[in-house]
Image (cartoon, rainbow, N blue to C red; front, side):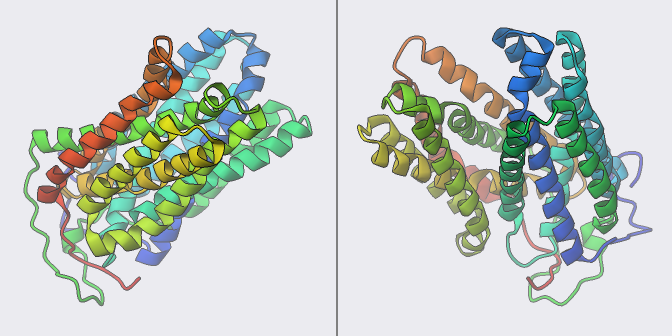
Length: 410
């Protein structure tokens, strides 16, 4: 890559075979989900060990989010300069090292410092692996992005199970998080060799395919990038609402027990994971714009059902429809954003992923503020409105849907 961030076409190197790179990308998404999941399940222990209040913890989590956003913007520029084959393993190793910190922290400021490192590394890895996923997807004749995001969910599910066992056995937090960090470092270093190089896709020798061989790249307008980011913001805000408020809605609105309330988020998470595995095949048939539009419509219907449902089974159906509807939209937005300009994939991804991440962080806080003034289920009208707006404005993707240039058989 040149210093200006454009590709040096004199020495193109593909790196690993496309199928190996695809598997490697799955692994990095799974590692990222596993790392964040292990941190989340150990938050209560860390809070107790550092003797901080809920309010202090909330502020420190905002610090983590801000550090992640900064990491995304830094990584966006770096990945275009040095290539994803260097940045992704480096970010994953940094995340593994950072995970040692929360288990060793003994007060608020040491925890804050470690969370800055965790957030920055997580943000950098998020942009790096999504950028690599876009590059890998260019080599296939059909969409494959959503399955990568499904692997993130699978990694989080493994973390929840392993973390629960570790907590039940009273394994020290520093041991659990340290072992997780060490595992991430080892796997990240071993997997890095299978990532694609930073060769420009238009200079890679074509392989067997029936897909078109030319890619015309036009500089994207800032307006279009912001529009895609706005769609990501809305969808990920809605996702954040489910992550933090689904179980509380069951307990506080429907009056269920805590154990039954857990099924609300479970229905959402399972439906989202299944939907992400199915999205790629559907997107190949109807296109990314339709996935975003009809998925957002289904999500709006699902959450509206949650708002009015007087019974647990009906509300479970609503949360499942909400998860299914949201499952495919964000991966399609990332694919479209990453293909706006092959010379600046990382920077474009950083902008759209960053705006989406802001929505993910803002959603729970906004709903919490609204819940002070109205019933929780009525506060859910906000993400319903955002889903409806996504349906209306999804057409902006039409002018940005990526063309295929080289591909391999699936």
